[in-house]
Structures are given as C-alpha cells and as structure tokens.
Image (cartoon, rainbow, N blue to C red):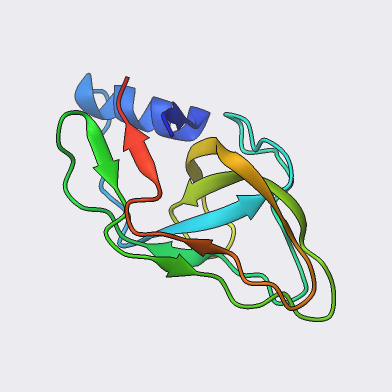
Length: 129
C-alpha cells in the first residue's frame, strides 16, 4: 500500500516544506471498500450491517515500509451482506475523518451475512515510494 490520499500528500508537503505544521493522529483505523477510494477519498466504503472501521497499529518503519503490528478482526456482518471487498483505506478517525492511505487487496473477498473479515499481523504494508 503506497497510495497516499490528496489530504495526506498536502499535509506532508506543507509540513516538510515549512509552510504549515501537522501532527500524527492519536490512532488510525482501517476501513473496507467495495470500490477504490481513490486519492480524493470518494470510493464506496462499506456501511451498515454491523460494519465499523477498526483501530490498527503499526510498527516503526524500516527500509521505507511500516507493517501492522497485530491482527485486526472486524465484527461479523449482521443482517445483510457487506459485498465484495476490493480495497482498504487507512483513516485518521473511526468515523468520518480523513483518508490517509489506500490500496487494492491482493485478493478480493466477499463478506456475506455472518462472515468476519480478518487482517493478519503484518498483512498491511505501507511503503514510501
């Protein structure tokens, strides 16, 4: 995963070029999408049927890559299907907030009523390219 959102690109440039400062969010969250959220964050995030973004933590970066430090498990889909999950996004808030990074899944996954989506430890790699 190396696609930064437009929001994060501007924050990064402003911060490191000295035109404005920014600080890290207190926590970051992983969200599931049924379409590419794109750099402007406009893609289709799952909603309803028990879906909620989940907190995700990362180890310190090394060699230009940071990986999630532990597994993340979403609650079971309840009362309906989430659909075909094709992309993930990393956000600075559990609801609303700003998209920071996004990427397509290596393998898309259909989440039906009762299914659980899991991300293994080190399953999300964010690279600086």
